[in-house]
Length: 394
Image (cartoon, rainbow, N blue to C red):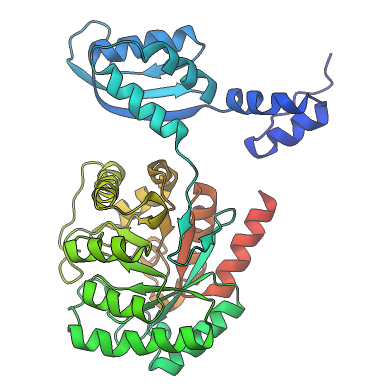
């Protein structure tokens, strides 16, 4: 009889299996049986939902459906699948031959989800970003009106110096922006953005030629000029809404960050409202990813950003942060850009941007726990140290 029952965390599972001395070939089998992966389906026809429940129960798993599903008093229901990887593979085997009630579509979506490769980003020159750890993107603002005054970096040489400091502190990517997108901000002119952004990117790339530089712009003309100066990534807060932007990144093979935003920065905080903010952000990013794919932009060229603070209340932002791991289901690297934003200030009792460092570090740790690919921050050193410490513990 065992002396004690020890709960084993998911992070310690493989180590405990090895301590027991199981055959190495059995490790993938135990991994597939170890953890329930809740998956939600929307608008499933009632007969299909009942079949899913029956087949999952037969395999030792389950799913949650509307209470009127069994009686047939509802035509459709959302379904929460509650199974392990092994259970889902068995479910696929059973429902794939069933040509009715929308089950072929469900089987196809489930298969795509289970077989989707891990997120990766390939730069135009062939280099790949390594998501075995959370990457840190340092913010360089060459504007005079960014919401966090300490981040304002005048001039190209000042931008290069700031980038050098961030690279020394452990930044993986430098994100350079020349237009403030804070709530209420008016857009800069094309000429002003070009005049500020392009010399800064040129100076950074000249001093640090192997650095990975992201150009924070939604204008295709600015993005083109930035790429010509060596920018490796385009960070587009509009979700690559402009057809010219899609054609540009497709033609040049440059990765693009697509962000969820309602409206424009000048008006985006005027009474934002959602029925289910996570579902709506997920759907938007999925649609933009599909639009890019349709234009020839490969999956390895897309990074998604839920758009913390872009047309969302503090409650909306906290919900997105709490359920950030759900956005990884898109299969793209997830970028969390929440550094010193209003959600931190309001949550912690009205703190100004200068007092939001600890809150930012906490959200970077949440990004690690949620499986995000990278964080975008003003304070590289503090966030890098917190992230690497948490990763070491995990």
